[in-house]
Length: 457
Image (tube, rainbow, N blue to C red; front, side):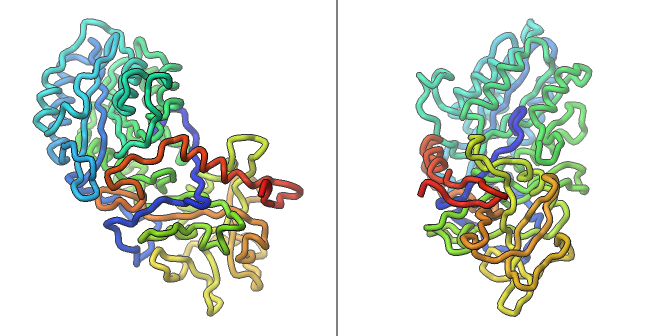
C-alpha cells in the first residue's frame, strides 16, 4: 500500500482486464469473498527487507528479525526462475539503513532460505541514532527498477515487475526520517506503483514513527491501516507470512475487493478483482462486451454484488472519484452498469464467470421506484455522492447514455496467474505504452444534465 495514496482507478476499455486464466477453473459457486490461496511454496514474490540498523534497534531486535524471517522463508521457495508459469519462486533482497542506506544483498545474492539467514545474521547495529529512511527507499528503487541511479536520465524506462513486490519495513525510530523524501519515492517513482508495504514497529513509544507507519499502510478504500504490526506481537511470524501471501493475491491494474475478516480481526483481500470499463461504440454491443477480453480462457464479467460489504467497498472505491485525471475531462463514476440483468424468463440474475446465470443473494439494494418492469439491466447510481442504489435501465449503453460498467474477474494468487496475460516469462508493457492506451480511451465528456456522449471520434 502506498504512502498517502487515495485511490488508483482501472480502465478496461478495449484491452480490458488482462486475464490469461491460467490454473484457475471458472467459479461455479459464486461468492463475494473467494479466499486467496495460502500455499507459500508456490508464491512468486519479490520481497525487500528494509531493516533499521540504527542504535535504536538494538542487537536483540536484529536477532528477532533474523529468527522471524528464517521461519517465514523456510515456507517459501527462494530462487531466480524468471518464467514462473511453470516453476514458481520468490526472490529476496535486503537493505539496511542508519545514517545512510546500504544494499546488503540484492535479489541475485540470495538463492535459498539459508542464504537469507546468513545475510541477516551478518547484520550489526550502527553507532548512530539517525535513520535515513529516504535513502533506504532510494536504494529500494534501484533494486526494484534494476537501475544504477534513481533518475529518469540514468534509469531505463520502467517496466512492470514480473512479480508483485512486498517491502517489509522493520523500523525503530523516526529520528532523521525525511517525510517528503519518503513520500516522493513511494508515490511518484514508477517502481513503487506495484509495491505493497508491510511494517513492523519496534518502538511504539515513538509517536511520529507510529504515525509514519500507519500512513504507509493506510488503505483509503476501507479507511484503515493494513499490514501494520507491532514487534511485540506473539503472532508476528504468522502475520507477516499471511501479509506476504496477501501481496501475492493481486489484480494487475485493478482493485482487490477488501473486507474486514472477523475470524482474524484484520482487513483482508479476496481473490477477486474489480475494475471500471468504458463503453466505446465501435467495440462493444452491450454490457457483457464492456467487460469482455478477447483470446483468453476466463472472461471478466459485469460485477455481482452479494453482500453489504462489497456494496460499501464499491462505494468507497468509486463514488466521488473521476474517470480522468484531467479536470476538463473528468466525470463522476455513476451511473455504472453492473451484472444484474433479466434472463429469458424475466428473472433478475447475475452473470457467472463460466457464462451461466445465478440468482442474487438475499442482499438487494433497489432504489425507490425500482425495478421498472420494462427494463432488463441495472446500474449503480448515486443521488447524494455518498451511496449507490440499484436502478433498472435498458441494456444498450449506446441507447441509455450510461457508458461505464463495474467489472470483476478472478485475481492472481499462489495457485493462479488468472489476472496477468504477461506473466509467462516476459516483462509487462512499459508504463508509457499503457499510458498511451489510456489516452486513446479518453473519449467521454459529461455534458448537459449528466448525459454522456462520445467525442473526438
